[in-house]
Length: 193
Image (cartoon, rainbow, N blue to C red; front, side):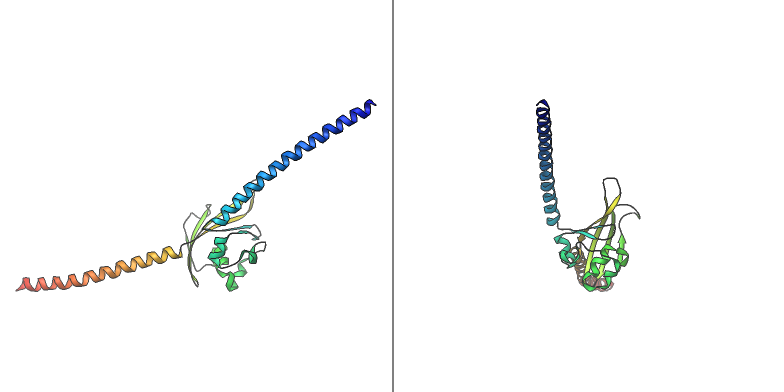
């Protein structure tokens, strides 16, 4: 009889420990889920494009801003490997040239070679785009590189405004200079008489 009571006590204690551990695990899972939801909301609401991919160039994250910048739906590429050969496909050319900057028509490096994050300005003519791309590693718990993340800022509108401003200043300076030159000649002519 004592063995039955001891066995029941041990079983009851084990059940209590298991219950307590499951409760803690459930609480931790809820906290992780909430944090993940907040992070997902943050990524989805950024105005800059986010592209994350693993070491095999399998696209993991492609936020709505990236969809707008590249004109590609996330369903077309998330969960699929994306290699440089995709630059041959018109809908994916801009994206491929951004993931593999050596394929882009014009690349200006803004950071030191080999330094992370790697920052480059990319210029495209068809379609007309000006992008600043910052690339950094995704690090695993053991310090290993698990993939890369790119933050893509579309500077096309900014660059158009700067070009318009420069053109305006050039035209205004020319227009101001022309009447002043005529007045100067008149004064030179009067001075000589």
